[in-house]
Length: 220
Image 1 (cartoon, rainbow, N blue to C red):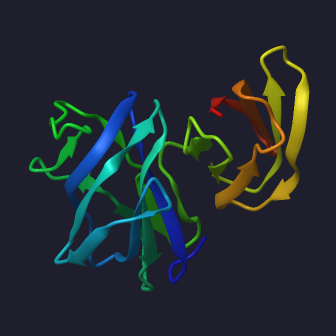
Image 2: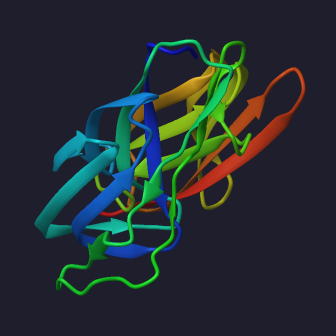
């Protein structure tokens, strides 16, 4: 990944919550990045503006979102500015005046959100500082379909497989080599019965391997 390209930065929640309203201010280094878009849960439009190193986000709905631990709450679309970099971090920090509320407009206290820190280098490009792969999906629970978003910190052989609660393989979604970056995939569950399923992602590179799982809830 290189300066001049656009990337998706996921913001995930650290515990389950019902999200009815968002009022956030997110700080970012304006000299390193340009904000190209913001979406609630990766697909729900919201009001936002970006200026002077601050992203202002506002959203409310009478149909609250049910988020589980590590679910995607906010997706920030970022374009990395071109320039001569030795090494610079793109750090996103949340202003103390930010608030998340439930369906009754009650404000959550001490909410911890997870935001990747990005690094720009003239050799390594831009990558996650925590050096980890990630897998999230939204919505969850869902009735018809859900969208997986996953981040590969380097080019990898990847499999993404759905299993039922008995461990029986239901469907293979991915079985191929993919380049580094943030990827997304929509999964249709129209042919599946209601219940609990599991998504297992196996990642293999030349130097490491990792397995990530997500519990899926299908409601009818």
